[in-house]
Amino acid sequence: MKIGLDLRCLPADGSPGGGIAHAARALCSRLVLDRSFEWVFYLPIGASFPLLDKEGLGVVSVIKLDNPSGSSLRRAMREKPCDLSFVPSGAVPLGIGVPAVPWIHDLIILDHPEWFPESWLRRQYTTRLVLRGIKRAPVVFAVSEYTKSAIVRHARIPVESIVVTGEGGDETLAGIANDQLPMTKKRALEFVKNKWHIDSPFVLALGTVEPRKNLGMLIRAWAKSQDDVGGRRQKEGGRIELVVAGPWGWKCEDVKREIASLPSDLKKLLYRIEKISDDGKRQLLLAASAVAVPSLDEGFGLVALEALQAGTQVISSNRGAVPEVVGTGAMSLDPLDESAWMTAIVKSSQIERPKIFNSVGLAAAVNALKGGPTVIQHSATVMSAAPIAESQGVRDAILKRYSWNLAASAVLDGLKRSV
Image (cartoon, rainbow, N blue to C red; front, side, top):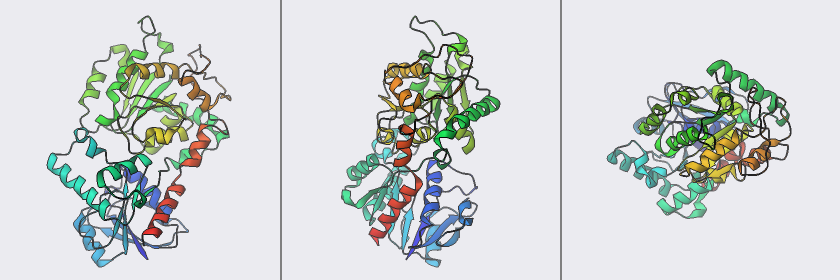
């Protein structure tokens, strides 16, 4: 049986693309190792999928599309047909002539259209197309239980027709052995110091700047965290910096206003990195004192997962799928409670960070964030990364729960069930 992989979500300019493109590559590179099916790649000309050259693949053919439009895909499927189409983007195109199974990342636009840039007409077309594909699919894949519940609520399909896959995060970070983390983090600290001149502990916010990421609140909370209880500005050596890394998205004027309104002494402590490579992202995740995920909603929680894979403490929202992903491995807060975020940021800078990484562990860091006992680092002259996960700690638990191999296994089981 031939399974078509609709990879029109990959950028035709050869760039890595965003979260969905990354997830599509990672997942499909595992799927094609399975020899139960023949695999047909429908790939836009110019799109990058280097793993097609690796050994051990099943039966694979690649069909180049003139462009990423639905009409181009329909022409290709008439000339080189498949029996079933897997759609990693979640948007099943009209008229392809074969059953299609979508991979749904979120349906947030249905609940909060005000967070998105599309016009009313465009939004109606896109959302109806997605819901139509879900309702007609023999099986539907969802990245989380949270997204699964959203599918049931909006599409009103039987819960048993939905398979939760999870995601795998960053396999490079996940592949770092626990005993190698201390040195890897130390090298990451040197990397960020040399590349971006960040030489103090920092909180990292990673991803496209858009309304649901709630970064305006984070910036205000961070700014307040730089004052001590008497309202006086902390001394230079005792501060924690904020790094906001990722491109500007849409409706982000509030974030720009918050940055512009910062006092001059705080502006120099906020680093805005708009363009960042995959390796640069990993170095920031490894070097950060804490990773902040204050989202108002998430279909999965990829940044939180990647931070935990890096052995870095996470301060996260208690909304959307993020609590499902992090479990008890993060400090979960109301994303609208600015005071709670301020307190968590202060605590993240007070957990012991000695020159030699010791056995405090990521679990102990989480405990400290939640109000448990911690050791205050009085000397701010030495920059150091967050503590490392112990052998049976938070990091090990997250590595067991999420991987691209596990996600691919769930998809393969679903595909076999649908044929």
